[in-house]
Amino acid sequence: MNSILKDEIGLTLTDTTGMMTEWPFIIVTADPGWGKSTLLARSFGGQVDKPGALFLLTNKQVLRPYASWCRENPEEVLGLNMRTVFAWNPAWTPAAAKDKSILDLPPFLDGLAGVKVVQRPYAKGGVAIKVIPKLKPADVGSRAPNLELAYRIVNAYSAGAAKGVVPYSGLVWDEGTEFFRRWAGEIEDVEDWVANVGAIKTSLADLRKSGFARRVGMNEFVDWFTNVPRSLECFMALVCHRADPAYFGQAKTDPPQRMGELKYRGGPQLTTGPLRTAVSAIADAVLEGVIDNLGNRKLMTKLTETHFRKFRDFGVGESIAIDQFHWALYRAGYSVPRPLGEMPDLTVAASGSSPAALL
Image 1 (tube, rainbow, N blue to C red):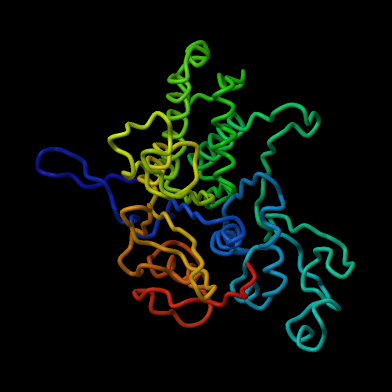
Image 2 (image 1 turned 180 degrees about the vertical axis):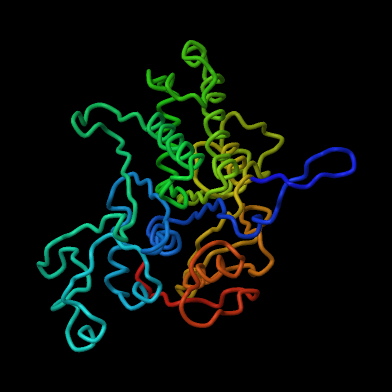
């Protein structure tokens, strides 16, 4: 960030010219199967001639729906010059698709109808994907060091950004709920590799002494992790399951005089209520995916007494239809490609989108 303005008392003020266009820190939360992963890949996978986000996945099947969506919507993929998981079928053209069944001539080399599976390299327009497994591939009885791997990946991204050589626009953690569960489990069990995570200042000796110290260690890591997009001015997203609000009286240790009072708002499903609150507070957008009584999928943007929701731009209403999410980001000024077609009115609540949309 460039500081170029001096005031009358000698302070150097911050240059805010990039404030409206820089990539946001977004949390998308919804029930499993709602379409969170495809939504993020469509919006932040990038374009063939421009950087896309690095997708850090718990397993490679997470982006299978996106690969399927690209196959079913090849004209939009071409129109936006979107990055894809698999290479285009050289025999496919938009004109040919109108005359032949997709099963006869699939647009991508993704295995459909017996065609050869060919992954598209990032350098040639593919989506950047890195799987962080829960278990060691060579020894499925042993836990993989997720916490250390996450720390090393973010440090590598940071070092590349400082040198101006990072090839990605940001980081997407999918599934964020599972990653937080893994990280907390490794700290709780005081795995040896926790000592290699510089963001955790609490010593291994102290971590082994008490549960309080282990909670402090997790908080130290999460505080560092959630400040990454602020420090690097890069895009970051957490794709999380949805957690319901928590009320006093649901735990045996809750004071009886507060029975029934709200304890924690609903929001992203993380390991504890306080973490949910802290992570939601620092994000630019916390969007809750819901399905209305007509079967339409939409994103809720407004904070309520019981749910964390927000979208830091007044150009968007209380909800966003799922097929207008990309438009909402573009309308807000974030650095995403302009969607196809005409810009909808995003200041009114979403009236719905096609429930049959493949997500």
